[in-house]
Length: 218
Image 1: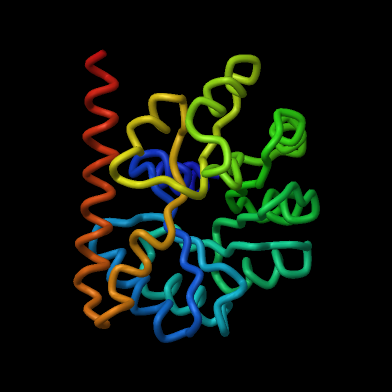
Image 2 (image 1 turned 90 degrees about the vertical axis):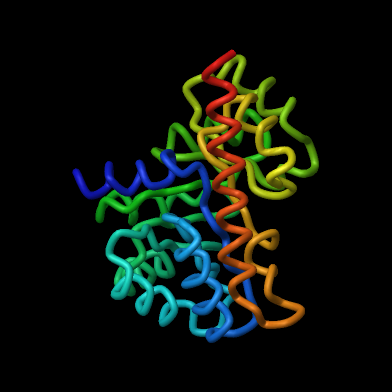
C-alpha cells in the first residue's frame, strides 16, 4: 500500500507521465534512459513498442526509484503480463474494468482513458486512480474545467496536445498531471542525439514547476 502511494506521488509531484510509443526496443530504452536522466519519474511504455514487456522489465530492474508502466492495455491478460514484467502503472485508452481489477489486486496504479463526463464518472466508479482525458487536443483546457465543475473529485490527466508553452493552462484547469509524448520522445529523432531528450524532459518539468508556482501565488 505504501509502495502504491509512493508511486502515485511520483506522478503528482512531477506532474508528468512520459508516454513512450516508438518503433524499436532499442530506441525505447535509449529514450527512456535519457528522459530519466532529465528527471522524469513516471513512464508509460505502450504495448505497441516491439518487445514492450522486455523494455518494461529492463527499466524496472534498473530504476527502482522510477515508476515504470505499461500503456494501451486492452484486457486483463495483458495487464497481468505487464505486472509480471515489472509494471506498477497500467494505462488504457478507454475504460477497461479487467485492467483495473487486475491492477487493484496487485496494487498497481491505473490511468483509465475517458472523454465524456459519463466516461469519466464510470472510470471513477470502476476504481481508476487517475482518469486520462484522451484525445485532449480535441477539446482543450476549458473542457477540463467544465467537466470538473460537477466532478471536482476526479483526478484528470490530459494526453495529447500538451506542451511546455500551454501546460500552465491545463494545470490551471485542475489537472493533476499531464501525459507527454513526442515533444520529449522524438527530440532526438533527426540526429540520434539523446541529450536532446534529456534537455526536453528538463524543459517540460521546469515548465510544470513554474506553472504550479505561479498558480500557488494567485
